[in-house]
Structures are given as structure tokens and as C-alpha cells.
Length: 553
Image (cartoon, rainbow, N blue to C red; front, side):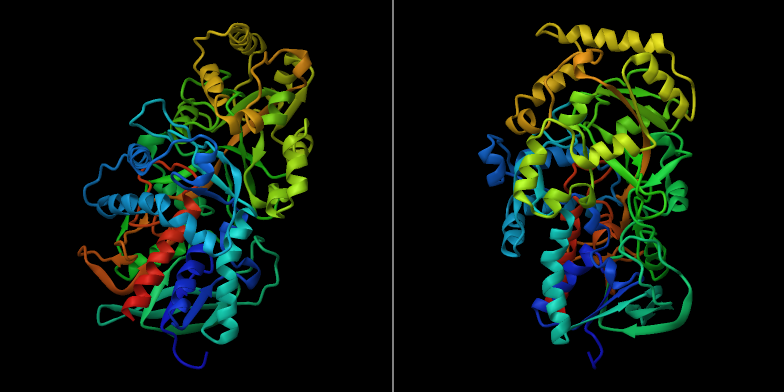
């Protein structure tokens, strides 16, 4: 590219790729700036499971799931809990627009790019037990055939083709330190050139400076991601009044380059930052036995049958069951004064209900290997990656009886020592409820309800059985840690992804998309997320930015 670009996109993750894709479709010239090397094209989306939130899809209808825009919007607004007139002004509008997109154009838009979905729709974040409150009333988690790398591919390939035609230039290893503001408008970026680095994708890279740079264009799109690996920023913004004390121990579900630097840089240029205290971290984190980045965490996607105990050995109350209400469970765990909890389960539950989040933990789906997928999902034993964590993960305890299991749990505990007899009383009480078809145990009710859904019954939820039944052993305990992940607040934007300034009007020349913008509006999710909405938020907000600029330039 010999001439000045029309647009500078900061960040080569999914939102930046989508914005660039839309711009080059309109013939615009783009420079994409990223502090990492080319191996990291696609950013953290590459590592994702590839879940997409869709409403009233053909996949849902084939499984007998009745969904609608109205029901999905009720779930979204009930989960978001918008309660800030000013800070939530644009988030509310983005929420309605995004749910409409998920119910109409989204599936076809992605299908036309070559993206395909697996036939079984997952039921994630089932909520707090109230119709108008938090949670998905029906299954909406559509798993991409090819997981995160495939979502990245369908946008990266046309962008790379545009690079070969001269419409796109990538400036890798260029770290933006400043947005250039001239006469009240953003007209470019300045920053540091980092030393070349040939590290593999996801590996923490050098920050040694070898020069500086300046680029100018008619507009800048900030698509740099959130604060998921910046524990200092997470601690500074942690909502103590809402969730309890910030965990002392946190492990990272995203690579080290997800540092949130551009949020402060955008604010310094006049952009408005809202809802800093809203974030989405998981309670089911385990240490990766084969890490790629520092403090590498993996999230367990557990079905509803495992018994969940806090650090004191008390069974978690409803609706703090696996896969139901993330933030309420976080608050319950932290209320004990400790930052970890325990799952107790059987080998039968592990084999049927445990999966791991992440493209690299699901090689058969990521590799689009149908034969391997069928054999893995229909096999009686646990999937290979799950089995590897059971055998090698530092958070797992396996034993033939409860006394040995508790001894192993106590060896891993970062807090109180568990009492065998107290744990046994609670498990036996639950086991007695399995022996008749009526139950007052809310978790068993949830299990029975899940098994009414075909996809859960055949592939996701084990038939109820006694935890202490040796026929379903061995017993397994998993120490669960807080896993840092998503930023739900950020740069406030209007529906064209224009950054809102301090005076409440758009800041000329500046746009923001993806997680840095709270996935749109500075907080489209409000306080909670319905899952399958993060990749979609990057796509929707990046698309809005690219299309708005294609029209206006």
C-alpha cells in the first residue's frame, strides 16, 4: 500500500478482522496494527470453543426447541439488569439490536461466508430459576463446526486476499501508545515498534522496543480486546459490593496480550469509558497441565449432575449448579472468605458430562473430523483431553472411596480442611433422593429437566445415580479456581460503533468494536452474559463499524 490508508484498525482479533472485511468489501484501504506477530491473527477468538448465540434457528427447530425474538429479548434484558440511565443508554439499544441480529441475519451472514454449525444445540447459562430473570429459557448455544479457528478463518481469508491485492497492510509488532487528536478529531496513531518475535500463537512475547511509528488515516477503529489477562486492572475494577472480595488466586483464560491497554489510551483521547466494574469471569477454572501462556487456565464445561461444594465443604445452594448462574455462584464462593470450590462426581458423570472449553481441547471438532467426533462423543469413556486432565491436572483427585478422596482434597486445599463425615452426610442425603421418582432436591429436578431435552439426554447429562455407588466409580474431586476471561464494560459507542466522547456526542474519526467496547455500546450484556454471545458480539460490532465507515468515508 503506497498511499495513506482510509482506516487504521487497532487489533487483529476477530472484531478487527470483521471490520476490515467489511471495509475492503467496499474498496477501502486499511492498515491493521497489532502488538503481536502474524501467528496470532484472530486473537483470542482462535482459542474459543466457537459457540454462537442464535435465536429460532433451524438447528433449534429440528430439536423441538421453540424460541423467539421476544423470549430471547426477555432473557437478555432479565440477565443484563440494566440499571444505569446514562452508562447503559447505548448498551440497551445494542442489546435489542443484537438479539434482533441473532434472530434474523446472523446465521445467514455467517453461512454465506462458509461457516457451518454442529446439529446439537447446547443449553448454557440456564439461570437463576425465575422466568423474567437471568438465564437462557431454552438451548441457544450453537457450536461452530471447526470451533474458534473456523470463525476466524471465514473472515481472515478474504482479508488476507485483500492484503495480496494491496488493499490491506498488516503492521505486526506495532504497539499503539497514543491516538492522535487534531482539531477535535482522531486522525491516527503513534506507538512503539517491538523487536521481531517468532513465538508461537498465544505464547507471551517480548516488549523490547526497537523504534517508533506514526500512522494517519481518516478514521481509527479500536478493536484491541479487553482486560482478561491484566490482573492488576481486574483487581482495580473488581465489584466488591456485588460479588465479594477479589480472589487472591486467579488463573487466566486468555493470552498475556489481552492487557486492556487501549481502554486507557482511548480514554486519554477523549473517549468515554463506562461500566468498568462489569466483567465476566468463570468459577470452574483449572490449571492447564500443558500451558501455552502464563497462568494458563481451562474452563470445565460441566453438566448439571456434579455436586458442588464450597471451600468449607458445604453444598452450594440453588441455583449454584454447574452451568446455571455464573455470577451468583461467584458471589456464593467468595462469601466463604476463600476463592476456590470443589466438584465431587463419579467416573460415569465425568465420561458423559465433562467437556473443556477451547479449540485446542476439542481437536475432533476443531479439525472437522466427523468420524473422530462421532466416536469420541458416543464412546463410553471420557474424551481424551478430559482424561488427560484427570490423570495429569493438578486440580484433580481420584480415589476408590470417599475417605481417600477427602484426604486428597485436603492435600490440595488452599483453605480449611474438609471433614469426611460432614461431606458424607450431604452426599448420602442427595443419594437417597435418587432412589425415588419424586424429589425435593432442586439439583436433581434440574437434572431431570435437562434430560427431557433430547440433545442433553443423548450426549450431555448422565442418568441419575448414587454418587457413592461403586459401580459408577472411581470418585473424582476437582478443585475449581477463578478463571479470568471477559470485559463487559468499556468504550461507549453508538449503534454505528462510533466512540462517544465526554460530552455525549460521537468523537469524530474514532470507532470501537469487540470486547474493548463491551462488545458494543460499552456494555451490551449488562451484568450477565447468556454465553455464545462473545464471538457474536465481536462480529456484530465489528460489522457495524466497518459498514458505517464504508458508507461515510
